[in-house]
Image (cartoon, rainbow, N blue to C red; front, side):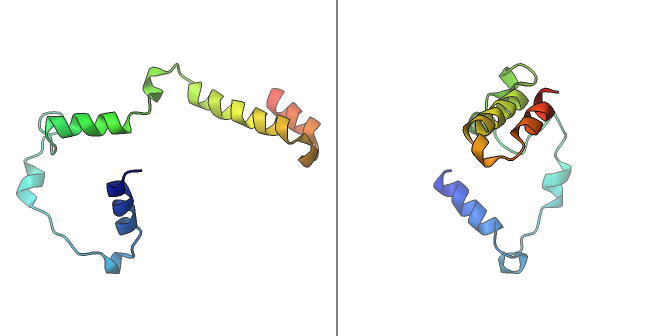
Length: 95
């Protein structure tokens, strides 16, 4: 995480009573029209999108779930001596 991100997290982790109260401008909010106007300028939106892009949307459906399942299988294969009833776990996973 960037230093700015860590600062934001530290601030958010504070109790509400420790945070500085802020107001809002009603005109700013009412001027917004979804998919027609934006709160942030285009370069900043592009930068934030690039920073937050995990690449998951370009992968086939089910890829993330398969990755988690594969990690689980690796964990189970590396630590069989620590798991009681490994056979039961295998039956659960593979039917």
